[in-house]
Image (tube, rainbow, N blue to C red; front, side):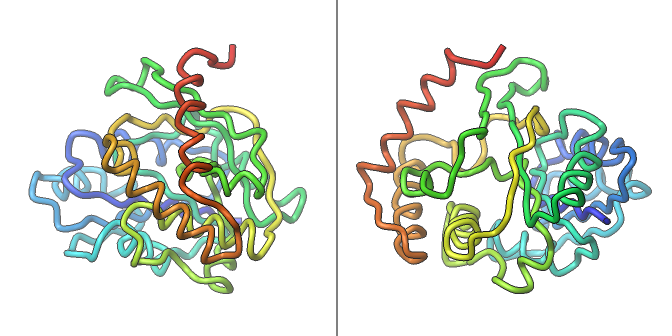
Length: 250
């Protein structure tokens, strides 16, 4: 079983080298790394060229946003399984992809996901630990989803149920999860342990205004896929996120 890791980048020269190395270091699994760069102007392409022997396919060209770029990566992927690793994130250890393959093979699953940690730029200082062990599709109505960087999906799901919707600004990944986990009831498994170190500062973590947009799109995604929810329900997740800062797993 081959794993395609898709990385979308734009002006990520200072971090994408770490990302490429973490994919190249994956062991005991057949992995291809695909990078879709949005015509960066900070030298990101030069960094990619410096690691070109580790990258299977890459392109740098204008796009219509992050989800358009992810869809390009899906189209380029030849693996049986697809994961998405941001250009400023890294895999937490060398066996992430191997564990995914073993899990999906053993139980003939459609998807699996695991824990992530939010870290500072040095990749060592943990700011937040996100453990989605208790996730269930019913929690989508409250804004909870498996962490996207740790989520691996069979490619056949994209072929059967569609890719990311580009009419969402921030929450197309959420809409995809709602569509797959709720509407189509795919088979999945939680994989214990941290798989991804995620640097703070992503598109969906950039302050109050982004959180409002995100929450409205979460409500829309739920309603368009048959889940009854509202903004007050979704806003309940933010106090829980604050608790995670103090209740990290040991």
